[in-house]
Image (cartoon, rainbow, N blue to C red; front, side, top):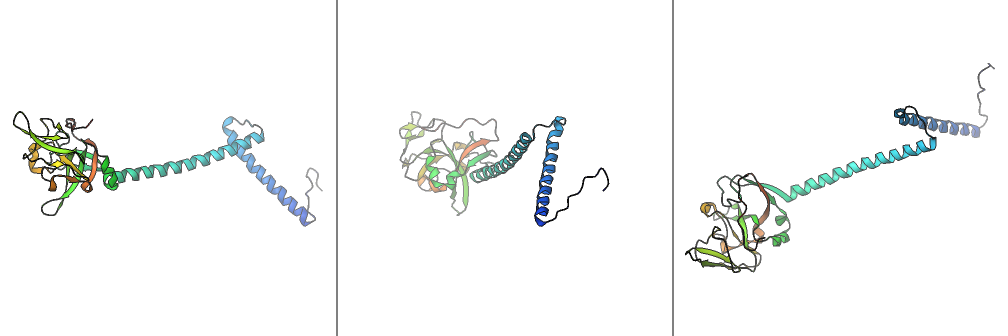
Length: 252
């Protein structure tokens, strides 16, 4: 035997061979663990704390990375669901050219954000208030569908009358409250009466655009059915000079 070399153990049985393999596996795991310690401690200038503390830090770091990875997946799912919800609920509607029936609140070629929840869930329509601007659809004389904008002035159960003011002008009076003098006016002195259940009394604001106006003054029966409401105008932009909406009776 050459001097300077440790004698090599030769297993004499299957049990000793299994023991040697287990010892080799432990040594391999220890070597892998030691390489992990070296990677962690490299930025610290080679400082090596106690092995149990380092092992705990490595395990904690691994758990933290796993938590961060799952948090990223969860955030991605939440963002996708939010985007899907917004896509289903809201719609951008561009007011057609020449359609100035809601001026000065909204002018032609303005873009408005329509809350379609009032179309998706019919029960939402009952939450509309006086003063809300709605996008609705109806069938014209030729059988075609048309979209229109109007402001809700009369709710189910409210009475709509037409009276003559001191200046000899006809004005709408809703539950005893007259519309402002600059508000929409009747085209004839007939009083619509009580708004039936499941309907609204709606008017446009710009009487000068009568050719394009479509509201309770020319709707069949004089009232807008709930089923025809597509949505409520939640936000409008596109005309920085637009004036605030005209006040509606009972609106805050």
